[in-house]
Image (tube, rainbow over all chains, first blue to last red; front, top):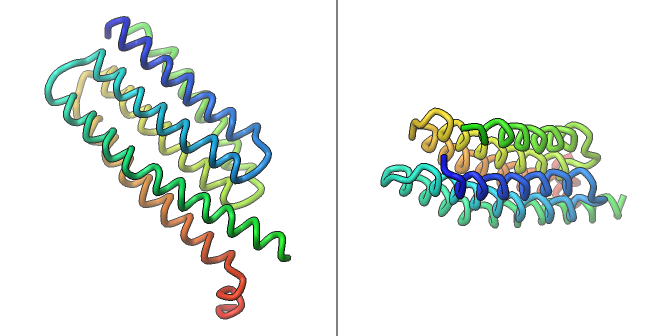
Amino acid sequence: MNILGGLICLAALVILLIAAVGIVRLPDALTRQHAATKAATLAVSIFAIGIGASAWNGEWAWKLALMTAILLLTMPLASHALARSGLAEQERREQV
Amino acid sequence: MTLITPMILLAGLAALLGFYRLLMGPTRTDRVVALDLLFSIAVVFSLLAALASGRSVYLDVAIGLVLTGFVATLAWARLIQEKSNPEQNAETS
């Protein structure tokens, strides 16, 4: 592990920790979803870049690129579905 | 190699905060959001295992975790959304 990859990985983990603090501290389900999903997507993507910078060869590179591509394709869909369910639950609680 | 230990500690602290919200969350959406964050932390742990052991098998584990987490989160979110829809709830119950 070289120093550049280590610094990138540490920055990604700090972003992940910020997401976890946001999921504990924020007051509402929708704001918690906002804090968790976007910051976690950014953190895992930057962490994959850091792993690729510290252990560079061809097989690791395309596997990390495939994982990041799947992550960037699927995480917005999951966070959108979570936002819809949070909104439906909030409306349900306001009606009752 | 000495940077692996603080990385594990940081990711473990994030996992503890996520488990707090998973156990204490007042609504069901809070718990599923915490579960989504825990899947991301599991992907990070799997990448850390690949880095620490030098084997590329853990990268396949990370790809599988991303796909499984996506399907699980989508299924739970759709279930909560349909359960909290009032007229459909009145039909079923």
